[in-house]
Amino acid sequence: LALPIRVDDIFDSTYHHYDWGPVLILSYECTPLATEIRNVEVSEHRWVRPRELPHFELLPAD
Image (cartoon, rainbow, N blue to C red):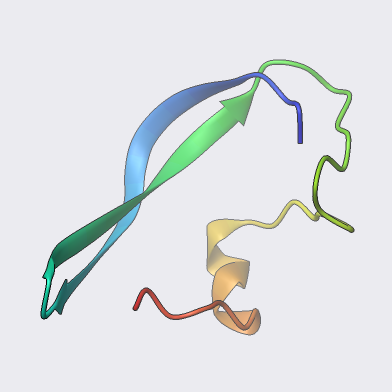
């Protein structure tokens, strides 16, 4: 998005153990530090509130 941000608190974490080792994915709440957003290597983006995330189909952390 080419958007500078301030990283705030951890929002969620996901852990998965593969045969070759563990993977820990941390998701953070962030605050934008600018207003201009560009679609860089993505076709679209959308801002949503954390409470809206269950309405989106997200890829599994596997």
